[in-house]
Length: 308
Figure 1 (tube, rainbow, N blue to C red):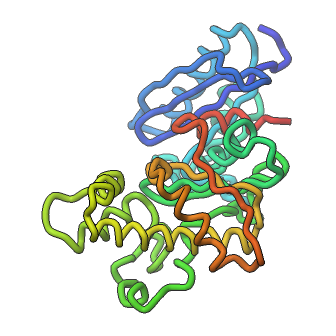
Figure 2: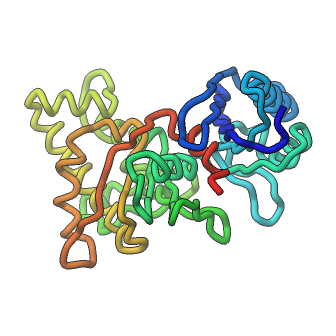
Figure 3: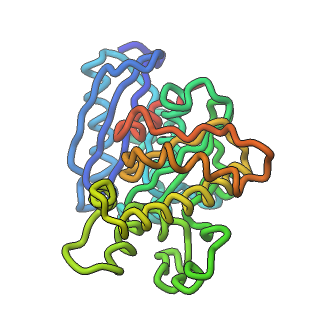
């Protein structure tokens, strides 16, 4: 093998699967492999990641840089994992353990940061100096990328967009706040209103019949259902309010949407005109764009953690 890394490997460490890809310097895909995430122990996960990386390097016949994206983050005080949905990793020295197995430095970032970085480097935000990438999925995470670099923040929580309260709530939303308890211990977090899970939960609570997901609610509205249409208009206004606070704080050139909610085409037409009501500016030119790389954004962003 070559001793100098010429290719980047990214690893997406999920609760059910581990995916790895290799990218060349232009972002072209050279190799991809998925395996099931071991359940028995943290050591089994470390071994699986190391074996996956070494197998990829063997096929590529080169030594690579390695970046890993995972739910949760490394504590800046202890270096230990926290907040991972692969709970066996919480409180563990994940970075050090994998580095020992691979005999090299690696880089680890939150999966939402990896999503934002992927879209900033060669996705929807390509060419922009500032990108905010937000995932409206089962939960609601986000990342900040400035000049091609992820901003972690002092506590490594930069971009925790979903655990701020929904801004400028109206009377009905204030009354309904108790129905929006969040797993973080607070009530009324943006995640409880705008995640795909939250959108579906609160629409279904007000109707009879089989529960619908966010995509099915859109289909219902497209078919002329007035209740579904009114509800989606409220969702779009909430999204505009939430994203306006991001613009007021960071003023990014581009906001890229990911997760299941990003597949709702109408938000790209309906949300931008609503921003002017909430952004502290006489005009709003921030682009609200759908992601380019889809489910691959996280693993590609992990590879781009070695962008320098």
